[in-house]
Amino acid sequence: KTLKLKRQQRKPTIRQITTSSCVHLEPRSTVFYCCNTVSVTMMTSFRLALLSVLALLPLASSFGVVVSPLNNKVGSSSLRMSSVETSDIGKGKINVIAGATGYIGKSTVRESVRQGYRTIALVRDVSKVTSPEGKALFGQFFEGAEVVGCDVCNPAALTKTLKDISGEGKIESVMSCLASRSGIKKDAYKIDYQATLNCLESGREVGARHFVLLSAFCVKNPWLQFQQAKLKFEEALTSQSDMSYSIVRPTAFFKSVSGQLEVIQQGAPFVMFGDGEVTRCNPISEADLATYMINCIADKTKENKIINLGGPDEPLTMKKQGEMLYKAVGKEPNFFYAPLWLFDTIIDSLQWVADKLDSEAFENAAETGRIGKYYAVEDMLTTDPDEKFGTMTLQEHYNKIAVEGQEYDPYTTMFAKAPKAE
Image 1 (tube, rainbow, N blue to C red):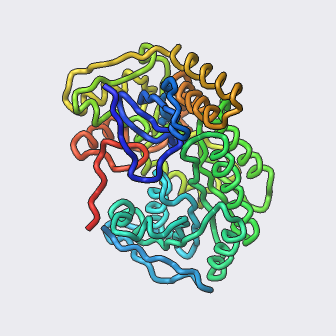
Image 2 (spheres, rainbow, N blue to C red):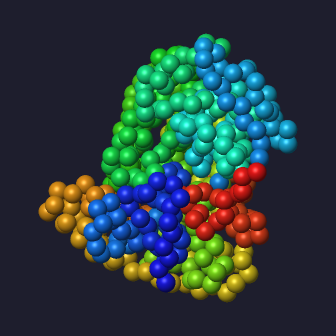
């Protein structure tokens, strides 16, 4: 049965109607990045009746928070995590994090505080964090951090913000967890390239020492727009010499392979492509990835390196992931197999209309389909022991969320429940 969900946020250009879970396309690291759900994308921006696009979404989460006003000086008072033991690794050092409210960004903020850094979380709208709803969503991650309002798409404002911060001490590191939401060309080059480049250039201007980039494993085989945008920034980062750098390319996030939890709990089948053995991955937990990224600041062996990073699991096919998920919820496996050829039929049809009408909207829909196909046919897998990190396995994650439920994310876990504001 087709499930339709209305967004509570702004209306998207592309609505995704899925037979397994309704999620917003989020090519993150990556976030991002092995196949787990079937989605049918429909053009809604111009209300045309169009054949639905079958697209696999990329693999494709209440404490007080102190907001720093940055009127000449960054606010000096902030709440410290009382329930998490902190270390002195970053004591006296400033770490600035862009994309702080993202799935990995917020975990990175928490880990940065835990390791003792004076953590500055850059957010476009501070009310997203400080409102009652924001505290419910982000409070546990931002306790101890200083939240600064800044639009990273505005290079002049960003540079001024970093100058104000550096006025109270040299910035040790700038960390980018930025990623476009849609993956289409316009968004990808605005965020994955230009906004991230703004962070680099502003960091260079104020004399920051190190730059840590959250990239994506999938850029190794780049035939999508967002991958090319990420690579264009990586080239800019590696070609400069003012700041040292660490580029971290995670395979897939746990949330990216957990999207079908709620639907199988409700009795729907687990959906996969082909025979379920087409692709393999070893995803990494957000906490483990955040730890690795913060470690990159002080670890000299990770300087000026591009690092592929997966979790501790052995290669997992999509069918294996389904079996693990059913084991966690205590049900017998029930699989639905979707044919891969559907992608080419739908993508080619949308691209033909885009070319005939010179339509950006249809072009974006075709790109969405290409993103879905990519994760249906490409491995997101590291096998080198040096490229595997962390302690939490996917089965442990599934066991946990089967009991506790998933962390709410308005873009990815549409059947999970958001925490209530107090």
